[in-house]
Image (cartoon, rainbow, N blue to C red; front, side):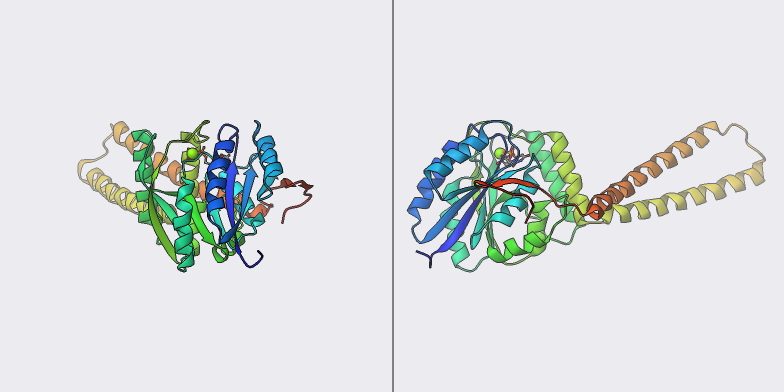
Length: 318
Ligand code: UDP
Ligand code: MG
């Protein structure tokens, strides 16, 4: 028994009462059929307000392979994932969404590549069923922008559904930033990556927790945590604008010398003032964005607190 390697299936769950039983059924069927590994299904209850925790507890009563980590409140999926990595015991960890958008049936293929020596086997979606064209379009533009400003390769159309070798997990555990953009972190740590393709299904039940505000926040986190390029753009644009301003100044001086004082200058003055004012505010905003991140990170708070791990009360984080 004990020589078998252990694989942790990590499931972040926030208000997922409608799908958990379905998920467990599909997962257990699958892992029962894989006999050469032991499994642990680790649910992270991310401060759910519905019956999620009770359902997980019931599952644990039925099946001791089910473990759970109950966070002290809702922290968001990014933090729920690192909490799960901290508490996972497996030689490999598979991160999967609770809503069955990531088909568990892909797991054997992931394991196959893991056995071949890959460290990070991630599932890339061929299509995005059940998503509006606007979401598809914005996500495409975001990936494009992000990729153009950073040297690290960002995987397109890839979620968090992946198998990570223990050494990737240990690497990720060392990245303790509080504003996490995990998708970028997966790329940042490197190691041998392998892509597999799949059709992403619609959420099986329940509602998505994403909205545009959250997506915009995540995009800004993604950009600002991986590159300082926006700061450089500001500097370059600022330089160009001041160059243009300087040339315009010379033009005005020459005009004044040649034609005398030209009183009606209201329009040009307003245009220049407004334009420069606008640019300055935008750049202040960009600087502020980075300053804000620095502010959060320098506080150095623990990134989450745990209420219970399985039946035990936790008083501190790992
Ligand atoms: N999730 C979480 N905490 C949150 C929001 C979401 O743990 O604050 C989990 C959720 O339960 C699901 C996964 O993250 O397992 C993906 O969420 P969702 O399906 O709402 O996102 P989408 O698939 O629409 O991007
Ligand atoms: Mg989903």
